[in-house]
Image (cartoon, rainbow, N blue to C red; front, side):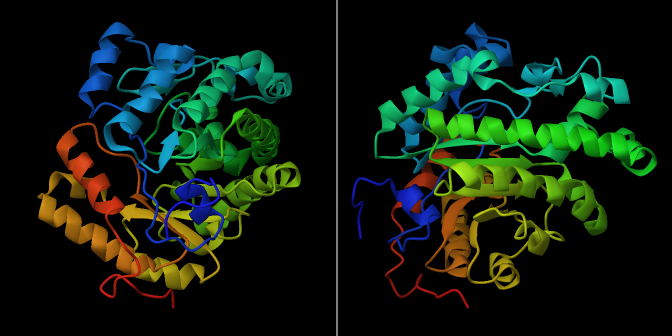
Length: 358
């Protein structure tokens, strides 16, 4: 079964159609492991230059497309990109990630935040997404992405990446009313941003709740899940046919709760066996993942073996092949090429790979 009706392969699978092989793309497929990216970084040393100057972001987004022809081409951006548009100034420090000079710690700061107007604060996103759609046509699916409310709140409150999350957890457990107001405001602006990306050309959206795996299940149900749901419900009201993917880093203990978010597809990381994930999520939930990014340091035979193992366990419906998280910066580029080549040669009609989701 090849491409039909002009609908890209990944989009068909994300909508629940049966396809002859799982579509494949890779988180952080545009990035430091590619020589082309490192060369461009020398010319544009600031991450915000690379992600907010349209012609540069378009070039970066398309580097893996030109090299590997993945089934998904994702917008090159960052989850914190919309924050200045709601009143939280930030920068992305090279090698360190987002930095927020004035973290949100008080009721007054939360009150001063305003709703996102993406046409005004993020006009470059429209230019980038439209160009990506024009470039790949129906040969690939254009993905947009956003940060989830909890994770963006964590950046906003902590002021940068964290190992302990002690500042936002202090707020969560000592001043929960302030945090809930922040999460509500972020949810509504994120929903606006998702709708904007779809209107600009994104065909699938992934929401990264990267830090929600640091919450206990009961706190996930209080501070993460309701706001994931709030975003997805608003998007589904206006864009019911756009598939939505949810990623939580370190999600082994949260899979069942993730499936309650309203996401169409749950990203599974490598700490969960794909067969176990399928059983836990049920046969109606589509999945994405879940190779350990470290597998790409192995031999080509090893990479092939792990791809086949994952695909067998995921079954012949509702699976997007990916890493459990982003490709690592020191990954050999030829191993990434092998990952894509092997994935695109799969045929789920062959007996050695054919397995129904139990």
